[in-house]
Image 1: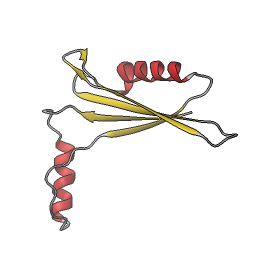
Image 2: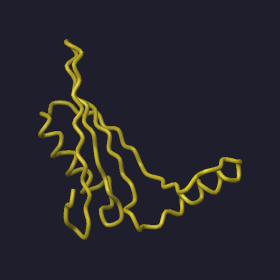
Image 3: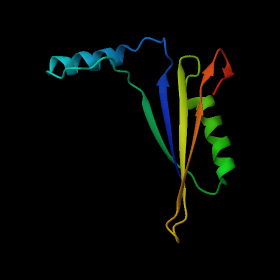
Image 4: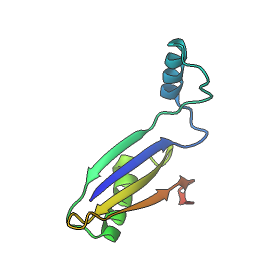
Length: 104
């Protein structure tokens, strides 16, 4: 099963890298960019876990190492598939932490 973890800065946290990228794009002639923020995408291949175990494990990974929950939000998607039938299931879990509490 494959997981994608998306990590973004919380609203209100300044994003100097995003500003630099936006400025660079504007200097190259790209117009109409109202705002730009930079985040991270982490892809993880998991095996030997149930869907529920994978969700729990990913949440623990994010809160322990992958995301700095003081300034970053994260959410993840898990893609689990049956290679015989070709059926695929995508589970998305969003976790937004504000002031040390999970709000979504």
